[in-house]
Length: 431
Ligand code: SDX
Image (cartoon, rainbow, N blue to C red; front, side, top):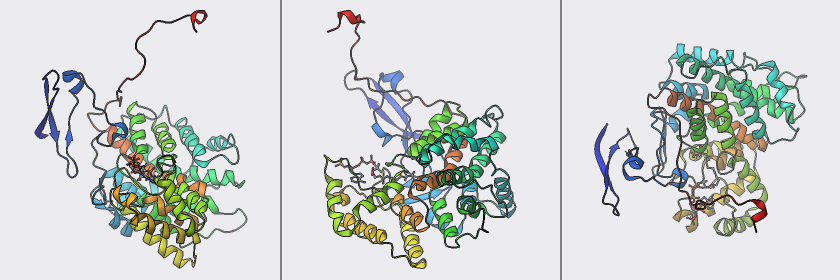
């Protein structure tokens, strides 16, 4: 409900439009401008949507100034310390933490949907052995749509919940097959005697010839990373899933569009780009050259893992991951030279006025790659791991959109700056 409004006045014509202002639970209120074009004949203009709320949502709340992240009201640091990734995925989708019976049923249901159609395995053969894993993931997630298209009614809540379980359950299977295919290893079926994350590591790294024992350090580290990557409000990839879903696309096709968006190094691809950057820096004595390039407006180089559209304070996830990274490297007795370079880069960047004045802090991707590196996850698999975790958020947001009574297809407008109207000229008469 609106309890106040703003007046937009066209000072050329004197025409005015009163727009209702809606307050949320937290965060900036919103101005409802749906009548702007009809009444004043104008659109709003907001490249990158920095000041635009595209939907209402109850799933995640971010406060960029305070560095706050809540999932269904629960602070990310409490979930990171006390919860599990599957429990967080339940929370994102259902809105409440499960009791033990609900959690057991959820865990069982996810196990029961962990297999993929045997024919799906053939899709991987179409890729070069060295194809980028995100290219493969976008393709095979879309391919899953072909197995669940005619049987899925997106307007049936039970079908939406079944889809959510399938997406969450199958992502570890789909992602592990990418690594196995690229490594020339046979695909591994899920082993439901193992829990979600151990099953994923089993499908990734087990050898047909040896019994598999999961790395005891890796399991809690991945549980933490997956929790921290599960959802993050209306990021570029989540907005893509919503937009694709708003056209009534198959939900797996919408998730595939989210995968494609996450691939960009301005977004989820940054975790891989951070490692590539730290490798290129090599030694702390070279850091100043990269800081100079990051400041150079004629150089499109950006310091990977720094900055965020929303966080103008330390990304709360980065704080959690930074400590976990320290602890993991210490426990594994790894004096990762790359970590030393990362720490020195962070120190220098946080003291440099260019970064301070622009509030460019390390983000979640700055440290996640270092943990994956320490766990011997190949760099090119970092973003698929991000996608595996974020699939829970994507499908929760898709479900929320479709169950919102006001839901309609997203169709932004534009400011046209092209040619004036002109008549066709036959080629013989062209200059
Ligand atoms: C993720 O949306 C989400 O929630 C995303 C995510 C999630 O969980 O889904 O949090 C995951 O994508 C984290 C971000 C990972 N990307 C990177 O680490 C890539 C490096 N970062 C930048 O590309 C950038 O900071 C963005 C893309 C993250 C944010 O870009 P914005 O909000 O459009 O910022 P901007 O381009 O308007 O930059 C403002 C200023 C500019 O300088 P001026 O023109 O004012 O002089 O800051 C500068 C930029 O040039 N700047 C950087 C910089 N990031 C911004 N300069 C150097 N290095 C950087 N990393």
